[in-house]
Image (cartoon, rainbow, N blue to C red; front, side, top):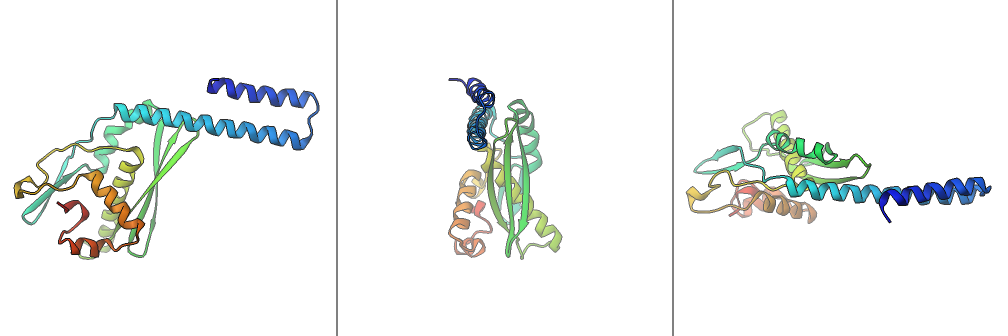
Length: 211
């Protein structure tokens, strides 16, 4: 039975029940059944759209190189990611939005991916505000917000980033990938560890610098 047929079937059941004088309680049950069918169909449509999007979306090239002393690393900026994925998302009826909030130590961002059929799926990422950075408070918060949005979007859509440079090869050490860094950061948040102390223990400035 196709999704379209299942919706038509529940609509026909409701119409027939009304014509036969169904009780209000019975009608409520049929309406709830129809809502459940619609929710299942919407989720199936969302999953198909995500599968098609991920199969056609190329790795996002890293367009920004940052120098930190004798080391360097590269990453894909949020605007660069958005520019790459926007036409593909529209093609498959997908869109996304951000919600953010301040925590005691940083910012938390929820990226919600939505499909035109009505189903949505959120992914969250938290980033600490670096109190040691040579920036004012507003700049520090904005930097953490941009960082959290970038990784929340990557997690929500299952994106991968391409290797645009040697990403630490000049020092003879290859660093973990963006996906590994995002997974590790999520685990740090899950076990309620202190990300700053964690990085200090490994003698790195950020999770991305881990070899």
